[in-house]
Image 1 (cartoon, helix red, strand yellow):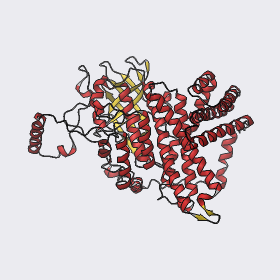
Image 2: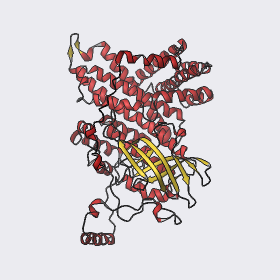
Image 3: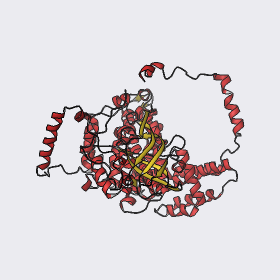
Image 4: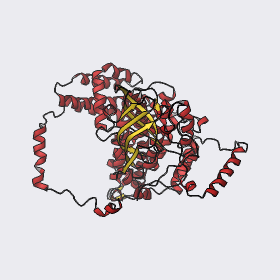
Length: 573
């Protein structure tokens, strides 16, 4: 079953992106009439038009409800989860409930950081964490839906669109009349923004023509507004740099490909998008020409912190369920909750969750204070936040035993959905190597990162050892990659140990968490000193080895899929 179309048509005759007076009328498409409107007779349409005109003459009322507070949002989400949500059906149907968008918009969930005068909530980053932790605990689909719309979609518009465009578009997004997302990833590059091949050309009249393809775009086929990032060339073909554009998905040349069948997060569709001479007006520009990387990076970094908050909520929920199970489960040695090994495993999962919570709270505090947060902190949140949270979910699944095998106990769906967070916004391996390479090249930056906090003396001594390992860079390329991965991981654990040791005195659990994090850093330092196995087979040797698998397993490619009956009859295509 195809995913429902949640795009809500805008009011008639309203221009979506204000265009410059010099731009031709066809550069940006006016709002199309709603389908139910088009289906009416001319007489009915005339009557409705007169009714609307009479309504427009009435004095404006000021009886709209006040924007919901964060507490009200959390209360709504908990009530919604208990009484109206069926995650199992969402997963099977690969779609969100039809009423969800309107209900989420009503409480402010689609305009979390949009200013109040534009219909939004203007939440702090600390409150954003609370909302996404709650969403993550309920259902990853709801969390990712809101995150894509608010971070990848709204954030670039808030940061880089003109005031006129903001005034036209953001109120509709906050009200749930339209959705938004960003198109960055491509078939051959994933999240490697600098490698993108989608191109844009500036036309003599000031408009732009975009050509190319994007892949794995969350909500790409459902969003009315899409932030497209492309390599721009001027009228003479000279490169200007990566540039962002806000496009209306109803514009000719904006083509939506098939929905991809994903391992998890099945209710938030991923699409291929193709731009065939997509023409946008000058007003579609996001920021200055060539500044698209800054806009895209800002969206990515904010999204990485949100991913950690969502994953943390899911790990809390999974651990809660596992703890309930152990208290009611009797084994040969007695209550499972009293088993020493089980207590140790659950406690370590709780330490990991507490550490991630401390990290995300620290980042939010800096951001709310208006301080610049270096990229490494966001990378640390993405890497350790998603890795540790998924490991905690895996632990909960294991504790549940046979019940973990069932796909109806929440934890199983968390296991599938949050496994993908280790890939989102850059895979753990890719970001770790990038972070490690950056720290090796700029060792002073690592020192500045640590000095943002006040870690315990014992942690500072360990961090000094991390810096020493960073200077021991191999000469061969494969060795450098492995070394960068080791350093990147050590940097992440250094930052995590810094913030947890700083908070150790807040409570008993914070003390346990700080001790656990320090132990993890110590353990990884020992492994790093032992060195990794660098005797790798050559690429040819490895290719030949894997090719030999054919003797054991043969050719088992399934040639009957997709089945012919899934396709349209050739005479009807």
